[in-house]
Image (spheres, rainbow, N blue to C red):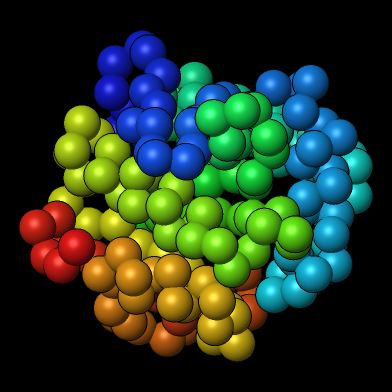
Length: 176
């Protein structure tokens, strides 16, 4: 569901702002997605080439839908990670997912929750989605806590891309 031909961004939060990823962010994204700690619940950390494909994928999402994963940074411009909205397929159904990665040295400070809440507000507000999910590795307790803080609840346990996944979801107007 595209929202016209323009890209939208989540509202700035008390500590964070959002911007689109560009090729100039390759070193930042390669550092984030290549960090074994950040990517410990993925099959493996991403290479620099895979990080560039990640940026390209998000730029395609901005062009097609008007949203994707964005760079999140402090108001001073310090890189925090990425967070945003992407379409994912689970059990042959398409869902709008809120996803997030936070730099290792900034984890545990509430940045993922703050950024994801702004993205959820965008999804259920201007974008007009009534249902948003988070697809999480069952062992990723920090990410599961973020989903729960967003008012999401477990909807199903399944496999996504051949790996176990817990799908958290929230209907618009439910919880906050």
